[in-house]
Image 1 (tube, helix red, strand yellow):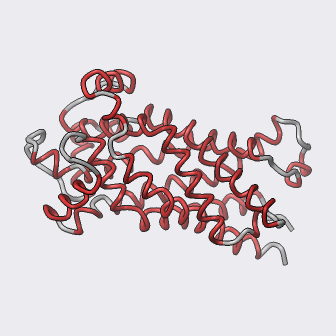
Image 2 (cartoon, helix red, strand yellow):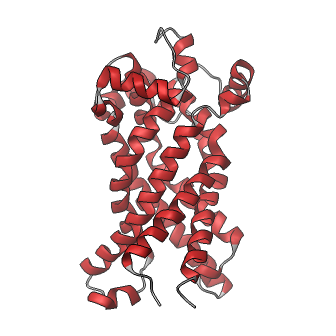
Image 3 (spheres, one colour):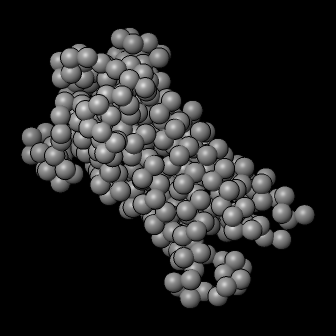
Length: 307
């Protein structure tokens, strides 16, 4: 028996939250290195130098700086993403004319339709991701901003950063970088869900079983492959987003296009890919954990309705 649509939404939201938490705990130090290298591309010689320097200067705590807002960001983003992913699948089915009314639930998606549904769902998740990721990025780059003299007073807690944003920019300040976030998420999640589902389909064909029965290792690999495709496509946009969100501590920043062109003209193409190495290293354990947490918890919850 299929669950009620409201119950289905709660299941997808809960499974997304579990997957988001797993993603953060498995990849936060590498995400910290990524943000630092994106914001200060000439400060470090490479990923290892950034990682070691942060550890020497601030300790292990520095590598996990921003974990609380990262948890908030990933849990909020993936809860909304996977909940809207379910709704958007129904929309894609309806638009493509595959069944009407109750028939919709019994129609199987192809991988392209799932990629489109994920892409549309990312617009909604961007609205909750942007404010929390703004706080996370600022905390992660706070040491470099203070030591370089770009800011006179640093904030080291989530609350102090939030108070600073509210005082200087008001509620709208939490949405600095929203346009860039959406510009990153829409194509990124098309590639993310498309690559993930394609990889699962290939494993299912090879193993002669259903996509839900391919096992832990194939799910982790498929999630990592989806994450790698996402970052390879949208990394320059993520770099611009991080730059806007961190540098907005010094005053109002230009929009996405002006910031992108400024980095391109003054620092070159390489600056737009600064921090890609820790991102690609992080993507397999982090996104693998994301989908494993999502698929496993969703399967357990859905099993309650199959009996």
